[in-house]
Length: 572
Image (cartoon, helix red, strand yellow):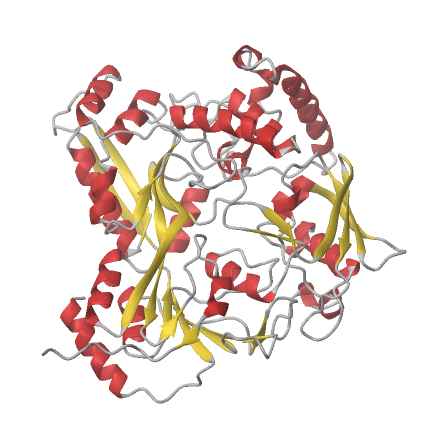
């Protein structure tokens, strides 16, 4: 939409707007809320809003550091048992206290396969059980399956009220979700319009926040320009932001973000299993130009998952733009031009987001210069994510919105978490030949101890763990396995370092293990980091916001205020 069109529509809309409650703010977002129950809020819009309504035992800042929230104390009694002492002043929105029973109930339902939440597997991998102390209503005992360095960040799950849910059909809320967070739900708590009310009535900020889902980004911008919304939070392309800012009646707020945009490559497919081919594809991407054009300059070039300021970040070499070297690598890999002039045919899968489609087409144009014919396939979001999760892709473009916990490297790239675990005898890729259904293939690799002697003991433990899981599987009691490694990546030493980092309790030592893993992953390139996208919002000119948070979380909306807009001086 052109700037002139935005300005015209904004002027017309402003003329029709009635006066609004000065302490109610309308927030335009890109998708409706499916479920605010923290045990089920797994999509981005639902999860972000759920954090306002529910509190966890801990919380995490935008640099990945955990802090206590509902927990007053978190004590590691033994490597496999932790104790949580709850705050005595926490209350649910119906006035009932938050107790150990609520915590035990919340974790028990999440870990129960019958409850049917997609996050249950990850919790079953970490916790054997979570029980309330029979002698102290504010004390909880956590029994762990293995030592967890990630415990502080694993406890961010919002706590649900057992007294309202236990015995209900499927343990679900029948009315508005009730939490203990700073905002309570008014109405159903799902759909395209969700109204929240601040619990502290005398707070200086907004009294109510109305979240309105508007799928089209141009319409979201117009809602702010026309006075129908006070702020459009995230999800606006640079072109829309620039046009809206020039149209008047609104301004853009931005800050350095941590959301990582990256490419995923399917290593189970030939020739993407070749490191030289993956490097060639990375070298042929002119990322500074893409940031300037596709992103409108609103991003920082990324070298890995974690942005500057994260405690586990290891600075890595930036991949240069070098198409000549890319051509040499493709020659070395035996990929010569065919009759159609193409060395390689690829399909890039993306969502139907306008910005993602633009990026994928720009990538295809750049790869064409080195003889790679890339076809862009936009898919409706649910279909796109289903294909990525099942490993049905060659290349995908995706964004990791909140890379807080370095254990996300384990989630994304550990061999045991491969999305496809059965071997494919028809593929020439060694990654596809691995059988990942039983004992981890890393347990038998002869190169692990040679790469790092510290991994020798880990490997023995890995074999014992695999044999135990194999035995338990016969009884139906096997531990849960992950499936978020969509690329099929496998490196035994990386598996070792990630596991050691996940078990090491001292943060400096954790950073050492994660640093080794990050360097090897950067060399192997199962994913190609592109940039960390700026956090941005379009704000009406009669509204102020203290700052734009790097993680894009909604908590910052508590600082919204109404002001008298500064009118431009008339020309002399």
